[in-house]
Length: 326
Image 1 (cartoon, rainbow, N blue to C red):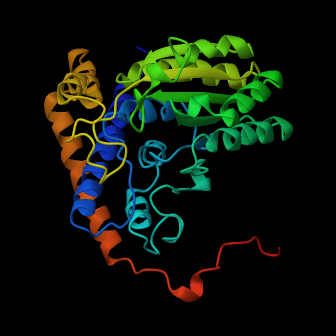
Image 2 (cartoon, rainbow, N blue to C red):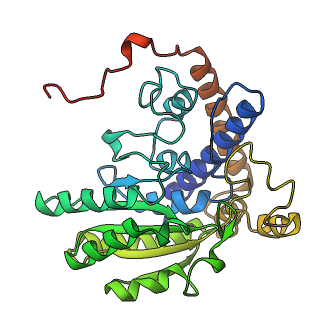
């Protein structure tokens, strides 16, 4: 295992940070304090954390509508994230972006988008910028199994492979595009099988194992930085909650059974990582408990910060809309 104790503990901290953050968002949404959609990342924490652990601060990431886990995994401020979700001025985008638009260019977070597959060409464009400017940053984009069928996704992969761009395509295959099983919408056994059509490596990885995701991503990063082009990684994962808060389709068992969910939850990414650390002697159960307690306090402080932060004023509506000068 190439990762050391400090790295493994930081990965666990960030997975806990995502888990407790999302639990707080669910609670806030249930109380009616959060207006609008939110798409919980619970169950998929190992994908974002494992991938981002292989990146440097100046490397770029772009995400999708299930957008809280990606920036938190990259090191984004949870206070700013929570404030943005609540539409407050203390947020990443001063409360004007909301749940699906968390960006922080200072650590390479280009932002997310609710338009399916739309972040794929953005990340590909960032990789092109890296190559043209002769810089060594790589770009990584998270997208779902549903997005893998969009034209923008295929066009980006084709161009990236053609020009050997330093971009990593991270498909988070959680089994469903809202309620449609990927088995009913993808013509091959795995999304990663499509990589051969573009002449790039296709890697299938256990998305519940953060270390496995790190290993696959790290290899792809080394290839990209060496000028050897893109990689398509498919991380098989599972979302525990519904597609978005308020749909209530899980309770009605409209597209998957409670038994299926319970079976998937037996392979919880936090438990898998915690067991890996303790069983190999990197850390103790007590140290893991301390990490969890620290993160819970962080999230409580983030919620308090967001609630105390003011809403933007109507007169500020057009601020930050354009570059100055235009």
